[in-house]
Structures are given as C-alpha cells and as structure tokens.
Image (tube, rainbow, N blue to C red; front, side, top):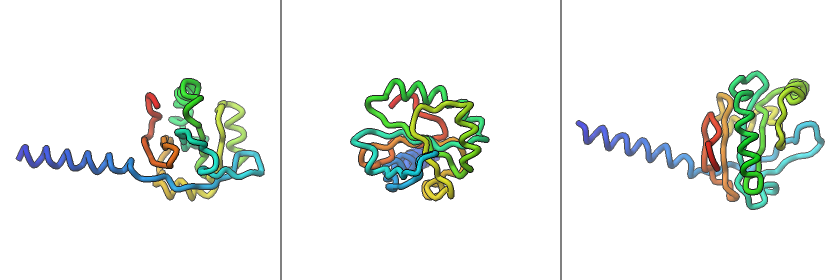
Length: 146
C-alpha cells in the first residue's frame, strides 16, 4: 500500500510540474490610459517576463505590491514586469493607481479574455515566462527569486 501511495504522489507531482511546460498564448491588450496596444511577442525582447494579474478589490494584491516592487528593482535588467488588471473599469483602476504605485506597465484585460484563457479565477496570480513564452512559474504569490 505504501508503494502505491508513493507512486501516486510521484505521478501527481510530475503532472503538476508538466503544467509549467505549457506556453502562454501571445496576446494583445490595451495599455492603461493610452490609446495603444501591447503585443506580448513584440514587447518581451529576449527577457523573462513576470505577469501579475490583479484587481482593485483584492487585498492580497495590495499586500504583494512591495514584494513585486522589490523583485522589479532586483531584476530590472533581466526581467520585464507587467501588471494586468482583470476586468475592471478604467476609473476604478485610475483611482487605485493614484493610491498604490506600480512602477511597471499596466495592461487592461477588460473582458477577461486572457484571464479566462489562462484559467485565472481568483486573484492575485503571478506568471513568469521565458522569452519563448514558456510558463516557468505560476502561483497565487510572487516567486521569491527569478
């Protein structure tokens, strides 16, 4: 029985780790408060990218801002940081950003198309991808290092 349990745990672990072999779909989202689009494949320029999905009502999102900012400062030459608001109106995001400062690009997933495609059902979610759009990390908390 112990052997079966051990084998089961190993298989489950392998299945969970294989999820990170998936690719992030290339996407185009609007840049907050600009009349411009952001196309991921054209913007990453050979760097890793940390993508953080958030919302104004999400207290965990607020609490992780200092950690994300410290990661950005530490890895600013090697990693591009992107925040994606998941489906809120511009005026709510604008009011939030006046109070809580993000120092990196803000994108709007207004209809939550990308969030839904990635199965983002609760917030926050942080995803790290390589320059080939391979997902290296995905969790409800930012990684401790990149």
